[in-house]
Length: 175
Image (tube, rainbow, N blue to C red; front, side, top):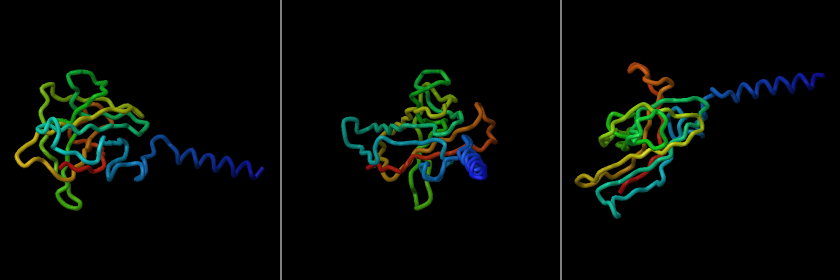
């Protein structure tokens, strides 16, 4: 009888520790963010040389690793729907390109404008999205170590005083 009691107590503790609301551990995240979104670039090194030397596209896969639905303001490529698959980081959005300026400091870089603008989109649990960051070549190029950051919220149209969740891609280089 005592073995069954111990078994059920262990089972109860295991189910509590595996709760769907439990944040992901540091090993599941891409840095020091909240850890609910995984942001993975296609490459770890990009170059301005190639066919389109004046335009560089950083394509990422954005995956909601949690069991919760989140919202983020991103470019929607003229889709005009809250349900999106292809997204863009642009001026006025919650998607950012950040450049490492020192060991622990990152600086947000200017983002491009989208003629269609940005809107809140839904990020469903366990769903994968594509997030593009488009860069135009400027004098002397934009080179160094970078990462992508996405801010997101638990509610649609969160008030401005609500602090967003933040998640980051791994770092990558542009030369």
